[in-house]
Amino acid sequence: MHPQIEAVFDEAENRYLHPDEINVLTQYVNTLPSRLETYRTLRDRELEIMQPVADQLVNEMPNESLPNLERCIKNSILVLRSCALGMLLEDEQLVRQRLEGWLSTTAQAYNSYAIDATLYRIMERQLAQVLSPQQMSLFRPMFGLAQRLLMNVEDEPLTAATIGW
Image 1: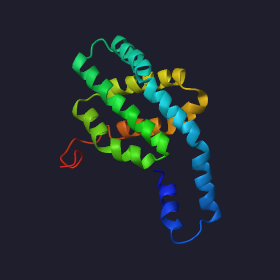
Image 2: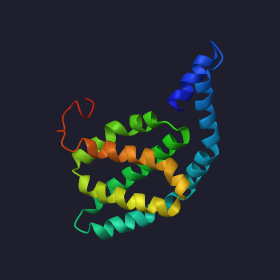
Image 3: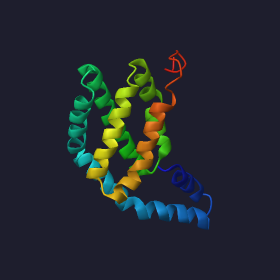
Image 4: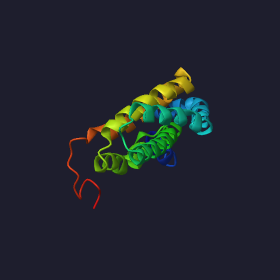
């Protein structure tokens, strides 16, 4: 759940909410129908989104091995689902927690940055074709966070600490 909303609920048992807390809750509730609709669209049209992405990735990267492409595509589906849940709950921290460790580590371990950069570019373009502009504006912050998490550690060496050992 959105961290600010969670904090509001924690405080609500001790006192009435302050106006700014009520505003946060109101904003959350008012956008919930749109976020639910966007989540359902992503869930129901996942194959329609990802199949063209996979096809185009294979066409754009013919020199890459099929196992590497498949691994990146599978990871991107997990990213899509995590971002969708983060968008639904309006919780960037959830996306960060789910992706931060394994996403960049996998990209680094398999040296898949070039594949991932191409994949996420194609994926964002496909998402913009399937989602309405309003839906895309709800989803883009979480998807952008995933892209940043993936690419920010590109130069960091793979060590026991970076993979959590």
